[in-house]
Amino acid sequence: MEEKQLIAALKRGEDRAFEEFVERYGDRLYRSLYLIVKEEAMARDLVQETFLKVIKNVKGFKGESSLYTWVYRIAVNQMKDEFRKTGREVMGCEGMEQGRSHVESDVIRNEQNREVAECLREIPIKYRKVMTLFYYEEMKIKDIARILEEKEGTIKSKLHRGKKALKDMLREREVFHEKETV
Image (cartoon, rainbow, N blue to C red):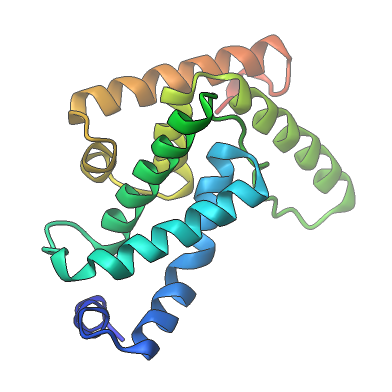
């Protein structure tokens, strides 16, 4: 089902559409939220609450962005609400994927990925959110700006500063040689 058809079916309240919606976006949203909050239970709860809000408010979706961008915006708001309630900072980032065929390179890459994830957890949340959306979700700057309700220039600046902070940490820990750095 194409996105426009899916949206129309969701607006009509079709169960099949909701099942496809969850199938299409559930894992992706969970992974993104987990990259930011680093807690399985919290990421799951945020996904469930987001989906409930989507179903409740889908009739108001105007199509000014992709469905996923709209859904992700709802998830970000849910996450902000949760952290306001608990008064704590978002922590964490899951390790990167690996894809080497030789055992030795797999071991090296896994260790590097662990180090990258650890460094990513240490950069400020304002940079980590932007980097997660840009690199893991492969979103465009304009969509990230819409989701985080910030100007595109601000997003570009945060992306640049986040990359610099991550590079500096990786160099400091000697995770990569100079030309391999992120």
